[in-house]
Image (cartoon, rainbow, N blue to C red; front, side, top):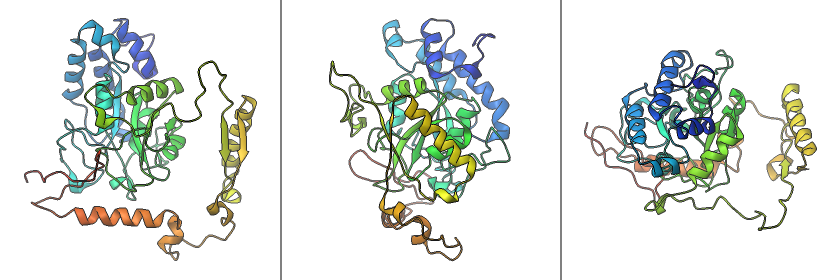
Length: 365
């Protein structure tokens, strides 16, 4: 088990990998500690949609038996990971946050889940999400204040990391479903460039906006997880990201790295609370002091943000969602609904595929 000097709750992904490689603890020790933390704390937080089980212990036991060379080569060896319940998992139920699909078992893992497993991660459970990553929120509580929302739709993933139940968790974002819960729960949410992490096996919301991402408590942990997830091993070419991690703008060998450029848009700035405005200004000031170039910018939507907002009850969906997002979202929703024709007692939703969208055969009732 993790030592008394460094309890499990204080360990990040980088720390866990270092301890396991040094043989100071085993993968089973870490998985057992994660299960204990979930049993003790998740009853009041409701971050996980699945109960702690033997699957994580069995997986950890398999990792401990690997040959030394393989054991040392896995970048996430023994790291507990929570997976948002819109990612398909073959060994755990995938309900997409809806009672309609309670107990549904996909036939295979989502591509990102497969990549994490191939890197040595231990999937300890599915984290709660808004139903279909859309409107109806989960019952997850914010670990910082149980009377406040953790944000959505990746509510369980952010809460699980904030409560120190796991050091890493996956999430998805179509509009703000990674950055919002990360901000509310006080953790780091990484929403990468579209296409960096694969969406195969993820319940779709919008073809042009859906993005897979990660949650962690430190930048080092995010960097470790991102590098592992972007390195598809041999035999998993279909899981490779459509964009490489080293994208355009990376410095050439021998050239100094350019200062990072951070653009910001002050949309509806006068409607923000003073604390929110101050926090953003403080961040921009700190980033500029550290050498970043901060640049104010405008968008077509921002230029029209000065118009008075209509009440949510009287405004149509175009006014509530923004005209830029609505057509794509509605079109994708219509496609999902048209494909969900039950073959048996219960329909099964299709998820992102590597080549074209298709849904799984209906399970036996």
